[in-house]
Image (cartoon, rainbow, N blue to C red; front, side):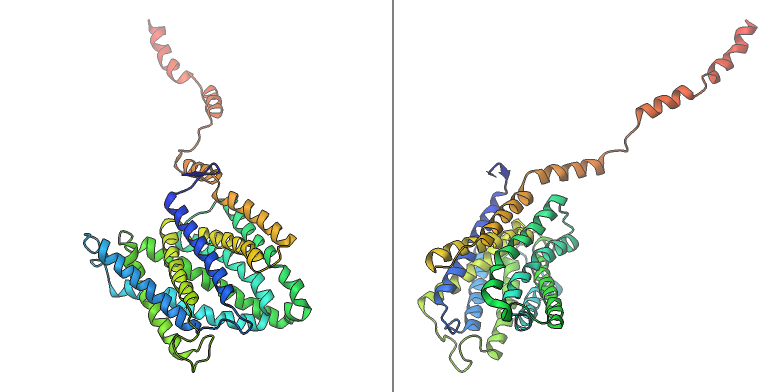
Length: 363
């Protein structure tokens, strides 16, 4: 299918549109439930429940639609492959602990601006792990996407004042190091998950792979629920602060996680970064309508830069560039005809005629 004269894969577009919708819905619903003291419900319980919903959905889908297939995933299942699905979950858990330290050291404004560095690390790891090449124009688009997200967050400095915006020099260096580690872990978790889906038994059903991933998500979040209180006191019950709206948030977040798997299957992590950026801007526009948040010049500049980045990354010119690369690789070495003709002209022609001259003289 074509959108604005750009060729787009239908499945990838559907997955991206679904992910954008669920991210925007997540942002708006979470903002609607937030109070001055934070979220009024136990977040660790909510996260555990959404992992259980994802596991239940993947299991039901696989059993009803994929179990009877010849390659239902079970024939090639090994302990090694199964345990590899724990890596994204463990990486994500470790990343969350770094996030809290980075926010405490740098302050929320600095963290919000520079945490978008994960866009760049995602593109780099996507190239290194999955061996997927990007054109020079696409690399420029990735840098522009990072720039757009930073521009859109610059207002947090002016709103926070000097006291909360910047840490000291040593703390800034240490916090920046944490941000690089956090961005790398975030990118690695996503790219590794994409590698599992596309490279490990690629013919196995997607929901069979999701079952393994979500299983470890349930286990890790169950342990987290036991040892952490989340928002809401740890002495309260499992369903502390739960309302019908909270249940809608949980279901929406579960759907968001499932849509991410389809992005990994039919697109890639870089497209996921662009999708997330689009969702941020849509959510900001809706927030200005429903929550009276202001849209300033920096935000509008960010929208313009994001639009340019989207066109540069998705445009058909990238297919032409890649086709030229492939043609150059496959084509035989070019022959300089002018040089060959000059060489022939300089070559003595007497070799054949001289051999015949004695015969002529004899005659």
